[in-house]
Amino acid sequence: MYDIQKFYQAADVQDAICALQEDPEAIIISGGSDVLIKIREGKFAGCSLVSIHGIRKLKEISMEADGSIVMGSAVSFSHVTNHVIVQEHIPMLGNAVDQAGGPQLRNVGTIGGNVCNGATSADSASSLFALNAVLVLTGSDGVREVPIQEFYTGPGRTVREHAEVLTAIKIRKEDYADFGGHYIKYGKRNAMEIATLGCACMVKLSANKRQVEEMRLAYGVAAPTPIRCTAVEAKAQGMKIGNELYELVGAGALEEVNPRSSWRASREFRLQLVEELAKRALKEAIEYAGGGADA
Image (cartoon, rainbow, N blue to C red; front, side, top):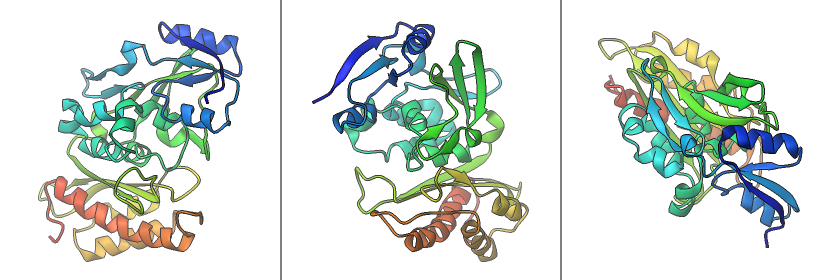
């Protein structure tokens, strides 16, 4: 059922890097919710696996002295959702990954694996884009930090090199403090569904809670990779909360996306979702930021 030639359990990150260097065809595995399915389907037949699942350091969530939130790459979706730091400071991300698959998948699937598989439909992707997440990659040459907007290079492709391990996802304080956020996943059913479209919005309001000080709008499945709508974000800055803002954001998002037709949905339907979900996510984010969506 699972055609695996070799399985190696890495003792630590450096051990995993060495194992990957020794085998150019080896594949990293943590929770296995994505890799094992591909093996069963024959895509990785006869592969060698390097497991980072037992590395405790990669399963921690912490806050650094400067307020940055750091999540290990092997943290499960369930752990992300239920962790007190996430619930208090970045609940949008917890809510997003809580919509991935069913309870069994969320208990084993990891946020690092969700990012590294390069899928635009990943439930964490658009939320991490809206949070300006920074990905910490560790290899034989040391550590490098890559903004998530620079990580994806195409469908299923990323800048991670073969012998590199995604060790952490970092979210800086200035990217979440005083923001309200909301993620909407559209699927044909409410559970265990790959997103037809995902939309994440973060917003910071003025002191009087009547104007947009900063807005971030991100999508999954609206382009070959997750994307941010930076042009409409700039237009929304300083605007008063109200219908003019919502119409501008919805229409502006359409100019920056490039969805495709698939068996899940047509391009035309996804474009309708892009416009509508932008408005809904923004309104919810405004509420979470302490404003009134109808102000």
